[in-house]
Amino acid sequence: MKRGLSLLIVAIVSIVILAACGSNASKGDSFKIGASQIVEHPSLDRAYEGFKKALEDAGLDVKFDFQSAQGDQNNLKPISDGFVADDVDLIFANSTPAALSALEATKDARDIPILFTSVTDAVSAGLVTAMDEPGENITGVVDLHPDAIQETVKFIDKYFPDATVGLIYNAGESNSVTQIEAVLAAGEGTSLTFKERTVANSSEVQQAATTLVSEVDLFYIVTDNTVVSALESVVGVANEQDIPLVVGEPDSLAKGGFVTFGIDYYTIGYRTGEMAVQILKDGKSIKDIKVEYPPEIQLFINKKAAEEQGIEWNSEWDDAEFVDTAEN
Picture: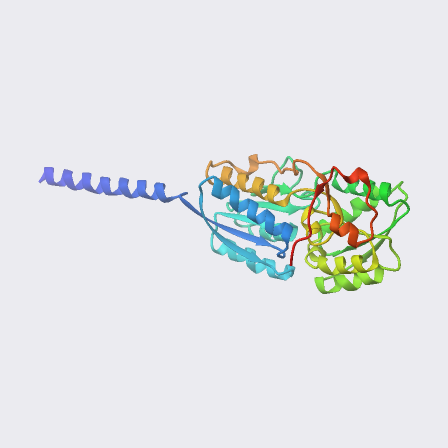
């Protein structure tokens, strides 16, 4: 009887141990990531592709729940709340509005890590206290190199002196306001003057560009999600009126922009994905991962756009990285 009881106890213990081992083995084998972005356009899309590729290269089994707010910030709250309700393993927030929404949604669920990218100024946006002080459950890679705007304004001042520069942006996007402030600051002491037009949605972009035609010599479109999502309308005006179109990132060159000092969004997305691997696979605490800048910037030019916008070629641009206009 005692022997039978002992065997029963051993059997029960063995089952419990096997169940526990099975649970530990399955836990972490697969992950669910909620991915959100304010709108779908080439730069954000490339960042998302880079993010996914880093996880794939690391061999992680990941199910992605991708959702776009379609340019409407009001759609972000239910998206983020849904990720929390689904108890995702990590949130990839692609753009400043998406990151802010995710942070708000997880205020009572700080065990869900958030990684952002395509964010211009994480500190000013209130996502983190400082670049070297990640939040309790948030960090990532910003999309603005510290020198990008300054170098762009220097370029405009050097090759288009005394120009009046048209700026079109959505004042409701904090990342855009930060950039416009940086543009105006960089323009102090130069020969340039600036004219601003604000828009609330992408349908207003063409009208804003049209109203600026008689007042400006050049357009400078920063990485504003609203305007970039409708950049073709600005390109159309620029080409028709022979107005150079300076942009904030290389993917806008493929849409018909002329020049930028920019970064590769795929690269910053990939780096953010590497952070996700550190968290999900290696167990690293998000508090130990500092917010990062893009590694470097370089001059990108679309030669066809230069021709279409009536720009006389300068041999000093021959060493630029060239981008072709994408075929429709």
